[in-house]
Image (cartoon, rainbow, N blue to C red; front, top):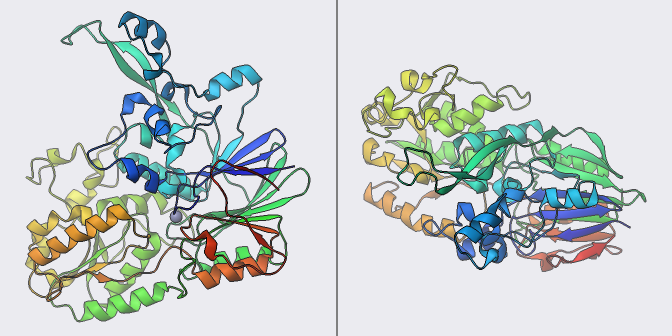
Length: 522
Ligand SMILES: [Zn+2]
């Protein structure tokens, strides 16, 4: 009989890691980072130690101890035993984890312990921990999700928590002849490509069949899954979804194709289970148009750089209010990567859209200032083949905006607020906070800082509060309730929610609030 074990997404928003076992077949549904757990121990200046590998994160319970799935180099660096002896370390547990790696299990069992990871979408709380998995474990996701993960690889900060398309295998090495201490031990790294496989509408992995359905969420490329096991049990996993975005027909189709299916189990997200009001993307558009048409100075809007729906909304807002939309280079980079996907209606260059050129490094707007952040100067993150200076040549600089602020709608996230110093927005400027993700503790702290900045630059006078224009990436309580009624499952497992107790189900359906690490037979 198949079973489900929930290693994350239990009583928390995000961190989904759900193990499905069917005989000898094992797959994970998502493998994301739990920001609640990690934020409980770490912050900006207190971070896990890269060369301690997974030991730190496992000790604190942020990453689950599971044998047979992780990279060997993050559990024990090859050849470390002799070094421990040489340096006189008498406690090997400082260097060696008691968790067995993928390779160790493979050697022991003669077959892989895990057959694949199915990613629902490209948000960190659903995929970040694949960085720790052995690179030979196939990652199944949509082509758009892979492109987004690739963009995160290129634009992100790196480190062992962010090795997605390739894993940098840590190896024992010695310092070279020019070092201060030649011949002493150090850690080197060898890149290894991670195996990604594109999701098909239908696929068979071991004894299970998996159907993938595109759904609407605040990143493009999101998927829900229907899994059929060897004994014809059916399990549905929603990933994250909503019914109010511009592509809500995808979610409707998913729900309609499974109506009356009566699956044995439905694993559903419940981020907004406690909220009754459905959001609306067109509502965000109308409110922004209303506010910006009354704005005399510069109009600014903050939203996530992977949120293509919100970008398209802002493109329309800019057109309707006669302004030029100036986007962050990160968003421009993602658009460039996704422009080939039909249905997203994205083009590298749009008449009414320009890219913001930040001052970087020596702050001189010199080409040499961009070698460490190439995507700020052009669409490429790699200058080995061809140097791309599109944003440098055609981008909008702070002084362009300062000269004529009322002509622009600027995409400006909180983390780019240093730009306000160069932009010096005039009286009557507006800041809109249009992020679609749920708030967490860290963001609350940022909110405080955000208000300090707005007050200092007299933005959004007289209150200096940001104008919140919100449409979430998640379905409301009544929408989730209706989805459950339509599918009429035997069991409902609420995940990705702080309020699993609020799930109301029809007669004949039972809610099982999962406990972390407990195995549920279906
Ligand atoms: Zn999400």
